[in-house]
Amino acid sequence: MSVEYENMRLLLLEHLRKLSDPVWRRENWAQGRPPVESWGSFDDFLDFLYDDSGVLNDPEGSLGYVLKNDDEVSAISELRDSIDAGLSEGLDGEGDSLQHPGWEAITAAVQRAVRILTER
Image (cartoon, rainbow, N blue to C red):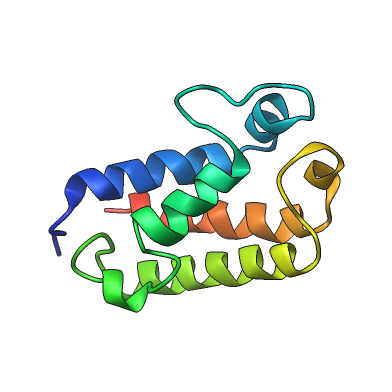
């Protein structure tokens, strides 16, 4: 199945790949370091994933627009749940929060989502 917004899908994958990389997160979101201009802060990532792309707000509604199949919807739903759990436990993507135990679940979920979204 193809998607209506292929460019949004490509941007989503680019964001997910960065989010899945603990080294990238540490180098770009550590306290005292300005965000990389083209990527911004953790809040910018959340804004893109929830609002701009809409995939975390409504994975099912993104089917055919940004997501191609039910496996992708499931993977994005799992990612949303892991991010929501981390946020409710104080994860904020900055400083000491980068050591937050919630990152383990988020990293696993986002890596799974990237794998599923890049399968042919």
